[in-house]
Structures are given as C-alpha cells and as structure tokens.
Length: 584
Image (cartoon, rainbow, N blue to C red; front, side, top):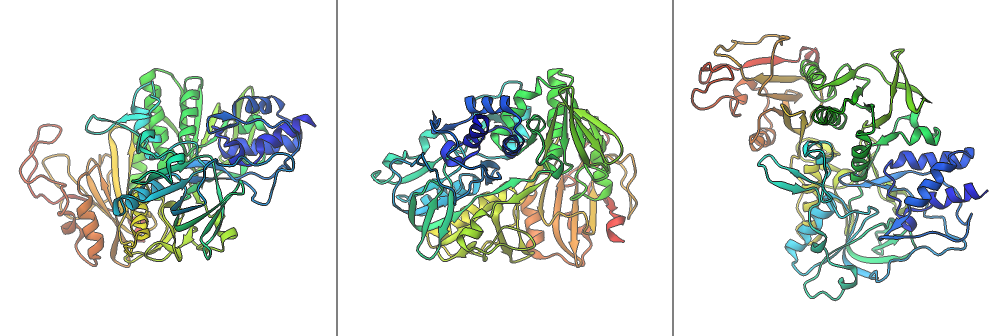
C-alpha cells in the first residue's frame, strides 16, 4: 500500500512537483505500470529521493494516497522541452496545490510555452513595445533554449559538456544553447513594478485551459490569469513505439524518447557506461544522433556499439531520393554505425541487464539502451478544454495566415497548422519556423496584422563531411531532379543514371509537384538559401532545371582546382541525376 501511494505521489501533476525525469514519457509510463503491477519499488524510492524538484526546493507530501493514479502523457514546448501531462479535473484532497507567489492576476501579454517560438515572440513584442511586460508560463524547468545542437554540435564539443551547454560554431566562436543568460529575464516579483517592463518566465507550471472569450488562462494549480493578448507555443511531444508502452519499469528505464536537454544530459552520462546503444528511427534526428555518437565513440576510444534501426531501406529515405538515401546509408556506416534497415521492433525483453529487441527480420538485437527518434506529435491538449480547432490531417491548431486561432489568441511553432500562400496548408516542426512564426505572432500581438509568408528552412549534418540545407516541401515521394558538381576535369553531357561511385560532393535537388518546384535541398552547398527562396517564391514551372541550377554556386566564376589538383572547366554542364523511381 505504501509503495502504491509513493508511486501516486510521484506520478501526480507536474506543476506540483515539476518532475524533470531524464527518461521523459517512458519513465512516467513505467511508474504507471509499477502502480498497476506492484513492481518497481527500487525505482520508486530512487525517484522519490531525486525527482521531485520545483523552483529549486524539494516538495514531499506528508500524507499518502491523496492523489489517484492516472495515465500519463506529456508535451514539449517548441525546441522539444518535455513535460508531464496532468489531469485538470483532479484535485488534492489533503494537500493544496503549490501556488505561484506573486503571480499577477492580469497581464498585457501572455505566452503559454517556454521554447523557441515563445522566446522569439517575446523579443518581437518588446521590440515593438520597449516597455511591454511579457509573461511566459512554461512547464519546463529551464529558460528558453534551442534544440538543434542536442543532436548536432553539442556532441562534437569534446568530452566535457559545460553547465552552460556551449558549443563551437562554424566560425570557431562558442555559443550557448540558451538564448539568454538568467539575468536577462525579469524576476516575477518585479514584473508589475519594473518601469521598463521585461520578460518573465514562470517555470514548472502548466496552463490547462484558455477562455478566449473572457481572455483568461487557467493554470493547473487553480490560479487564473487575465490577458490582453495570448500566444500558444506549446510545441510537441516525441512519439513512442507501441512495443515500448506499458512495459515493466526495468525495461522502460532503458528507453529514452529523445527530445530535450535533460535527455541529452542523461544520454551523455550513460554513454561512457554503455557497451551498446541502439537508435530507432531513420529520419533526421535518428541519423544525426547515430553519426554524432559514433564520432564521440571514436574520439573517446569508448568502443560503444552504435546501432541504427529503421523500417526504411536506408537513412533519410522519406525525404531524399533513393539514390541519395543509399549513398547516405553508406556514409553513416563509414562513420561506424551498424545500420539495420527494413526492420522494426516487435517485442522487447530484459536479459542479463540488456534489452533484447526481437526484430521483424527474425533477428534479436541486444543493447544496453534504446533511443527512440520516430517523430513528433503536436501538443494540442488545450484544444478540448478551450474549444480550439485542430486540423484532422496535419494535426496542430488550425490558424489563419496571421497565425490567429481566435480573437487575441495566436499559435506559433510546432503546434500551428497554418495556411501557406504558396504551398497550401502546412504544419512545420523546424527551428527556423519556430523562430520566424514566433516573431510574426509577437509582431501581430502588437498590432502588425501581417500574414505568414516565410518559407522556413532546416539543416542537417551527418558526421563532419556531409551536411545540407532544405526549404519547402521535402518529400521523397515527389519527383526530384538533382544537379551535382563534377569532381574531375570532365563533365557529363545530358542525363545519366546515378553511378555507384558518385561522390555527391555538392549539388542541388529540386522537388516538384504538378511540374512546379515546391522544395529544394542544397547539398553541401551553403550561403545559397536566399536563391532557393527566390526560386520557390517565383513558382518555377516547366523550365530546364539544369539552367535553374546555374543560379546556385555549384561552380566558381573562375577555374578552380578540385581535390586532386585538376582544373575543372568553367561553366561546364553539371553531372545530372534524376530519381527514376519518383518519376514513374
């Protein structure tokens, strides 16, 4: 009975305890399983000792059994911050919820979320109204930070990760993942009195309902805030695999739904103690992590077996044409990753302190930890309680071109399903979109009334030699046309099928829908994104894409030497490839 009461205590609402469990959703489901099965007492005591932290103080209830168990879930602010899902209908019978001391009853600008879009919006509001008071309500226990380095630069920053989570940029300068230092933010107690306003972040709290008519936000702890303008920037939550749901705690404790800075810290700590790590997912996040961990293993001489498991035939197969996916798969294996394509996990057991993953290809894969990177679900928890519309096809709150979902209520970032004037209705999960949509929402909250027309981009790095930037609709099911620079002095004339020995050092891939270019990948080709945006905005249609490719810096204006010292002809016809499978 005591064990179950302790589990219920830890499993209760996040605003009470602000549990920052490094395993995220997986561990919370483990606690739910422990409660139902009566197992996992050791894990329960461990979590009780180290988990319940709110505002820097530990909160331990003196009465057991005051909260009923509930099925857990979670959400992330933009940039991937993971938070526990609570049940707004529950109330503590003997222990009062933790209230935020000094929380204002009314604010001019309220932002629900504490990630990239939320931060961008707050800066935009302050830019247009220098004395504005902006309040961010975040379920995260961190100040706003950027997520891309969690699968890229931070892993290449050496063996020691500093407290500030700094990494080296391409220019050699160090940068923190946090947008601003703590001193930048206005303390809550000064929110209403500071003469020049500021940005205040209330951490470890959740908004569970918004009344758009009366302009009120209801917190999980029962407090209510009236607002003038409000932005929802709640981001998304990482998807899990059904095989990992409702399993024993000792199994779930070895599964990480990778998304936030706490996941990075835990994986970084576990890396040196592991002999084998398996990354599940062949998309951007999974492939970046696989290459980054393989590089870390090589540099640290740790001899960690890195596996990457995916249902597709190769990495990035859903976004890259088949020939380029095949080539990237070889590069990932060259980085030291054991690639396991065309396979998924159908069962999991724990044998000798290792996960035994039974695969659909008939094999059993033993690994210390499984990192799940299989996509994102937009967090739309407020839709039901707040009567907000969700797009049935794409997910996310359905907003207009100005990112408004109701009067004086906007949505930005991962959770927004917006109307793209060029490409139709879309939902985008990239950092650049979170920045720009958040900024536009902030401007519109101060009266700008601007439509969202920006074509957001994303970038990816596979190891230290392969990188690309992309914009628009990047979908391998569309017909594609690739133009790649030739490595030697000679250049091929006309079309030809890709060769196995192609190196694809630099190129442009066009994605077409109804003979119109709707997406562009710049392969190892940088500082050309402004050209790609122009091509998309112009709606290039039924044109010779080889000629369009000449707009990009595939070749220098004068003769340059290739890696072998051989001069290449200026203006030579580029090596061209087409994805035959996509054109059939």
